[in-house]
Image (tube, rainbow, N blue to C red; front, side, top):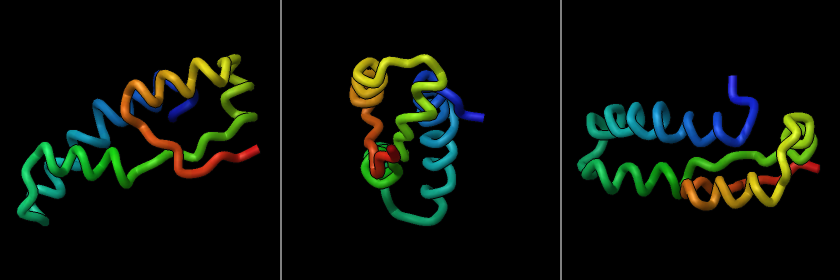
Amino acid sequence: LIEDTEEVISFFQHYLVPEGIVYLKKKTNLSESEIEKALYEHVRICYDLCHFSLQYEFHQDSLNMLQNAGIKIGKVQL
């Protein structure tokens, strides 16, 4: 479902954050901005070098796009 950098960013921006805000507003006393900040801080991706290479993406470009979108890497898989 998520095959390249653009799809990772789209998933975060159009699904994870909006759905996370709705869900966590019911479970916490946090504001929407606090929830969004927490999601970007605690939900991270596993950056698989082979997978991104098979998508013909340049790693530095992918890493720059993720950083600009505020998406953190929790694990790198070689």
